[in-house]
Amino acid sequence: MKQEHFVQRHQPEWIAFEHWLDARGESARKARAERRNWHGLSDADMPSRYRRLCQQLALARRRGYSPVVTDRLQALMHRGHGLLYRTPAPHWRRAAQFLLAGFPRLVRAERGCMLASFALFWIPLVVIFAAIQWQPELSSSLFDPAQLMQFERMYDPADPARKLGRDSGTDVAMFGHYVWNNVSIGFRTFASGLIAGIGSIVVLIVNGVMIGGVAGHLQAVGHGDPFWRFVAAHSAPELTAIVIAGGAGLRLGLSLIAPGQRRRADALVEGGRRGALLCVGVLAMLVFAAFVEAFWSSIAWMPAWIKYTVGGVLWTLTAAWLLLGGRNLPPEDAAP
Amino acid sequence: MLDTYREVVTPEGVALHLPAAGPVPRALAWLIDFLVRAGVMMAMGMFLGAFGRAGAGFYAVAMFLVYWFYPIVFEAMWNGRTPGKRSMGLRVIAANGAPVGWLAAFTRNLLRVVDMLPLAYAAGLVSSLVDPWGRRLGDMVAGTLVVHDARPREPQPAAVDTALAPSIALRPYEQVALVAFAERAPRLSEARQAELADLAEPLTGARGTAAVTRLYRMANWLLGRR
Image (tube, rainbow over all chains, first blue to last red; front, top):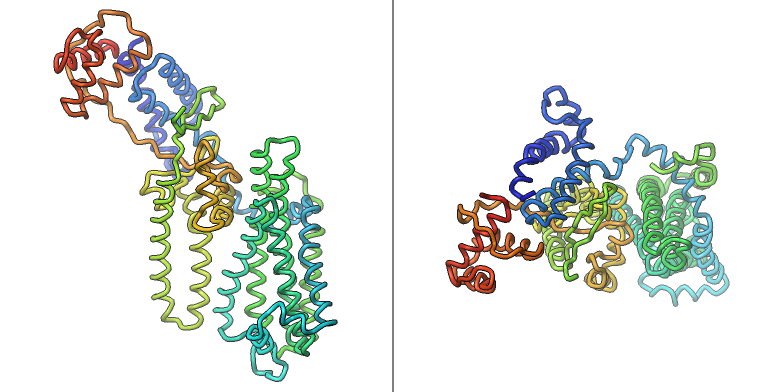
């Protein structure tokens, strides 16, 4: 069949399909609202029309028709393909379920990477803290004197009017700063895991050393009390989130190094999908931590026992959430 | 094959040819997006500057959103196009040709961190030059692809009305070349048309404008315009 005859014979079908795509394919909500006013190709006929179109494109290519025809058919087919095979829209209503149940399950499913990340973060932290108690001058090899002065000023027990953990800045300003700074660190910790996990390992160790160094120095010079009162509450979600982001990064790096029985590309896609889901939870944890850090942790007049009680409650809740969350859920509901 | 088409065989057994985009248009799109983002942040700075120190907090939150979520939200909600990509005619799609989802958009933009290493997207550039479909590392992990949007081709009216059967039977690829000539030549200069038509002298038995007209008529015959 000559090209012109082919076009003439099938043109009305293509135009009807194109009309359907323009009117019904753009948004599901609009399509539902206007279904009574629609008199073209019916929705139920679309898949079979789409398959006819695919067959016509295959024919057109086989017969060597010109790009005017094949490009037009391919454009129509691509739009139809996008509608039929698109990623399902996320269930926003199930976001809470993901955070409460799916996320802890995902963390537990990656427990090997999470434990490795936990060790990479907490062992340097504790070792440096202990080392500074034993040799206080070690802190000056980690930080320069100006930084040490600043830390001491921020947690000065002789200055009760000062807000804890602050050099300057209001609660709202610090909230913004913590969100920007901490979430960026969390995301970078995950993403840098793509370099065979090395990036995540470096970030975890460096953060462990820094936090251990600050805590150890302040404890050694006798500024420990305001420091512990400051960090008691928000440290639970914040440090745990960094460990989880590191674990997600290690998972990603591991799927590059040891893809198992899959192609490396497929293993990476799966590692990226799980890592991104974990990062959604890390984002929520770090925003919550920033909120606590800005509006609760800095209150200096609160008696120490309240601060430590709240800190204990938050640590317990975080641990219980991650260890027990979503235990009795059927497996297929874990991902959103 | 020199083309950077990615062939995706759909479940219907027909291949989609997706024209993958190279690093240069993507860098330009990034630059446009960067300027848009910088403009938004400057406007926010002027607006929030009026609120003093609390304004600094909102500014940091705005910076966080614009830095991390501007590409994610646009790609997921605007059919794979940020304003920069839209102006360059680019689109992010999933590797199977379907529109990109939220999670894939999130993944590919988080992994910009690695593509930016060690500076100025060097890792991403190397990766997109090595990969046959120009994907940066984030695209590989997210299972996405940046493609050129297809430009609609308007069917051209025939340059001449009459048809002429070729004197010899043409092979399929020769027919394709002839039809392609008839569709594209009207946009070339007359001298260039004649120069190209002269190559087919054994077929047309003529040179210059006469050869061009004969080729047009043969293309009409091949297309079935009688």
